[in-house]
Length: 437
Image (cartoon, rainbow, N blue to C red; front, side):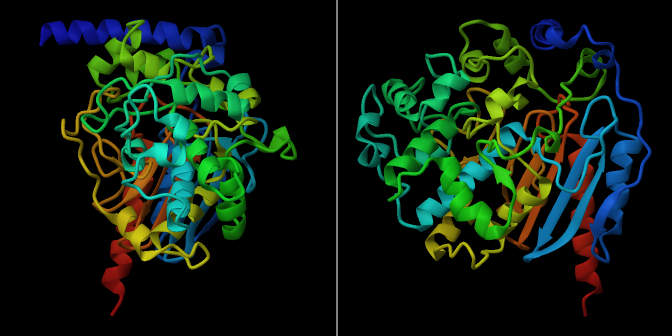
């Protein structure tokens, strides 16, 4: 136990130095944000007033700077709130149409694209990826199925080449790099978070199977975002003015040491080891600090695992549509059954080779597993982003939830700001059900 504590403490110290040092020179990045008291904008349906109070407490008690929360229930919007500032200097208000980079919460929208593509019959989950993308079938990947790929079981969490905006913008050249990559473990035997890479493989699978050969960002925009009226972008268009996009405040040294968080000690230690699989999987990207992916050089290109930009309203609308089987998406019963089915655990168990904790995945989504708060439903599916953004769908009650913010925290899926809102939403749903005659 003592050895574990020592390793954990050293890991936190070194990780803080490596990841946060580029931001440590700025005085405002070396202290916790001051509590903000302000007007909460938006609406809540009758019975959901406690959600507004928890949202206000995020600013009053939990150090929020700017944020939005939205909930759809059985196709109706029941919560739509925003408040705070979209800039770190606290001068520009967070508006109704403010957008923000949500980091890995982007995976939820990429997963939605894969769900729709499956419903359209573009691919079958238990067929080899190489059937649709022949070049993929090299370097030990011949038998990897689409299901294994979307469940983080393919062993492709790391890429041998550095990920840069220029490289991933050239889709054809990058596809060649992806096809040549060899797995890091026997596919199907383990799973490990494909934190940076999953979206690239999803993108190429869409390009190969879509009759129009669209990228995943374009497919998502054409077939999901626009029909649903959901504003979210995998590749932010030049037409969106910078003033609409919130600036992101990275987490700080103070938060790293004095805020409660749950990051597995072994994961922290391996993040510091140059050749560890965890480090190669999560840090093989051209950046200097934890908030850099929110820079326009990243958000303007399609990075389907990490640099999506949108609103809480857009996220909740999409996941609520999946959870409620919105007729605008016209999803096949077979696809809906796959979406709601429990995750299939790999032969080696639930332990994640990258995150070093038990996880569950299917169809590109995270499934119910602590500490990721997807509400009480075992059938819920969602995605979480670095810093605290949260989104999920609950098919048991047809609910879509999303929370986005611009102040990053160091929590692993259990951010107290989002958790308080999730718990409050479900308390309101239960109370409403009890009042119904």
